[in-house]
Image (cartoon, rainbow, N blue to C red; front, top):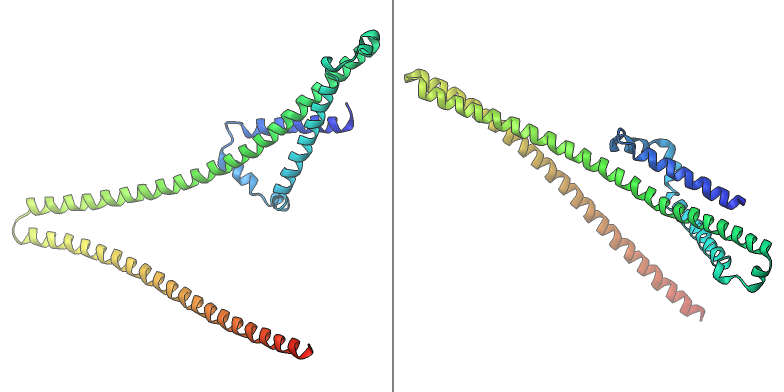
Amino acid sequence: MTLQWTAVALFLYIEIGILVILCLPFISAKRWQGVFNLRIWSPVAQFWNKVFLTMIVILIVLFLDAVREVRKYSIKNLGTDAKLQPNMFDHMHMKLFRAQRNLYISGFAVFLWLVMKRVVTLINQLASVSGTTAALQAQAENANKAAKKHLEDNELLKKTLMEATGDKATAEGMELLRKEVEKLKEEVKMSEDALKKSKCDADGLKKQTDGLAREYDRLLKEHQELQNLQNDVNKKDD
């Protein structure tokens, strides 16, 4: 094998090894995402798309060269001289075998390069979806716990009102109602604070947008004045 095809074969074996490691079932997608987000990959991440396209172009060129060699040394394209010289015929067969081998190596290298990029993308997407699902599940569990607590409080209130009599029932019922009202007031207050904060942020963003618009108008006016001044100077020079 020549140096270029040795390099392509080595690249193919590296692709196979990486894909086997990425498909190991006991390594989760989140762990792979943590590996992909390491700082050592930051310099490579800036040029990843260029490297990917460059390798695709190189492998496709080698694949087309292998196709050309296969067509060149195929049995159908052999002349009558090859049949007259057995050594030449065997040499052509050897050339054809090498061309076919190079064709398979370059073809699988291109295919696995695309597959490897797709697998990495799917692993990152799976890790992101898993994180989002875990957060939503935690929120759902908290909401279920709060709903169960409110339901228990309501059941306790009903039970107290039904079982107790006289002033005692009224006092216990009022105490439970007071606690519920205080809890609802706290929730309303938190909602009002969040609403006020959002409103303040919106007002600040609006003021900033208005300031940028005024600054843009001022710069546009100055640009127009400078352009008019330049036109006057050009007319005087003419």
